Each structure stands twice: as structure tokens, then as C-alpha cells.
Length: 133
Image (cartoon, rainbow, N blue to C red; front, side, top):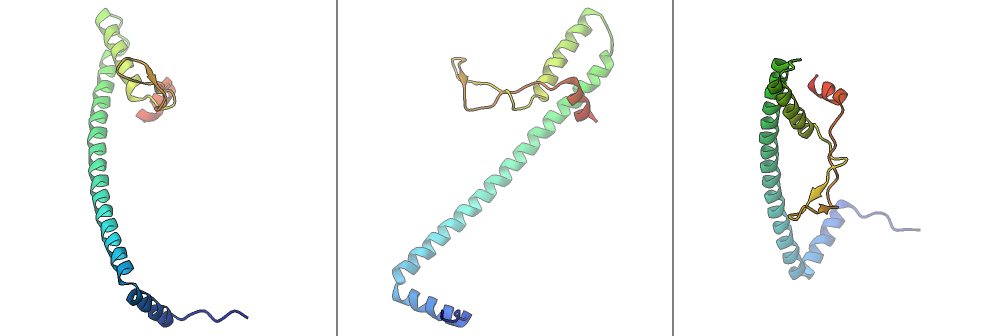
């Protein structure tokens, strides 16, 4: 028959006796715990900073998107050469803004593809309508 489980008081006594028996191990664990707490705090600051930066750039891209949508409405169905050029540029920019990471191809300094990143694909016009809604 197995012995009954230890009570909380017995566990504390065993823990104290183990710590007293090996003060070097206790000091090492305390030092490691302090180091991990410091690292945790530094990582929390890093995460907060990255979230602020992400939000900043998201807001900038959203402003650009709104300006492009306003320009798109102004140009409308115009057929003059300048309007056609604006439409083409806006379509390219919208393609970049709404691209997904499914088919993104990263390139190195020589223009050679790098396999580490997924490729970007421009969404269909139906995706743009969903995003704009």
C-alpha cells in the first residue's frame, strides 16, 4: 500500500531542509530566477514597443488607403490619358496594400529569390470590396 500524500506543512519542511542542505543550489536557483525575471521584463518592454510600432505603420497605411480610395472615386470612369495613368498606378498600389503572404518572393541583394519568405499575391477585386466594407 502506498504511503499517504505529504501535507503542505511536510512539503515546506522538506523544502527548507533541502535548501539548508545545499545552499549553493539555492543561491544558483535564486540567481537564475532573478535573471529570468529581468529577461521577462525586457521582453515585455520589447513587445510593447513592437506593438506601438506596428500600430503606427498600420495607421499610416490606412491613411494611404483612404486617400487612394478618395482618388479612385474622383477619377471614376474617366477615359482621358491622365486618368488612365492614375488608375493604373492606384491599381498597382492597391495590389501592394492588399497582397497576401501566400505567394511573396523575397529576393537578396543580387535579385535572386530567397526561399525563407512566402510570396505575396494581389487579391481579386472581390477581396478589395470585402476589405473596404
